[in-house]
Image (cartoon, rainbow, N blue to C red; front, side):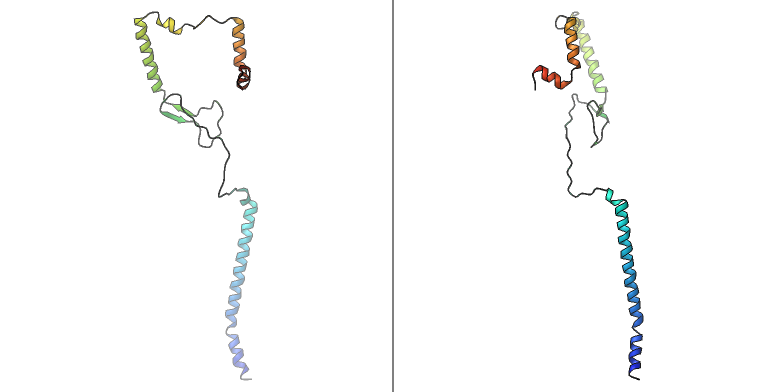
Length: 157
């Protein structure tokens, strides 16, 4: 019996280590299960509504916008990726350049008209005879047609 007692004493000493290890493993298992449950709840409540891609392509039209006149941009009316429609103001230019050019043109016209008094009437006179009433009516109807119908009627398809 004395030989069984030392074995029982040896078995009793490691028992607390085994219980502590089992407790820590259970605690780790519960933490993993809670983390998985938390992630699953987040995914179904919020995460599934987000689109994530590593290699995405977007179909769209890229249009080059070029100015008719040079100038300094004062404001920009559209950001990158904004939807714009025909007639939307994209940029506003500094009017000082055009005002200076207009003043120079008026001064040039005034100095030229001082040299030739009949010049303004020749410059601003109509190129031909005035249109008749029926011609004016046809021009009004033509202007009211959409662009695609005008092209069809003119023979440009």
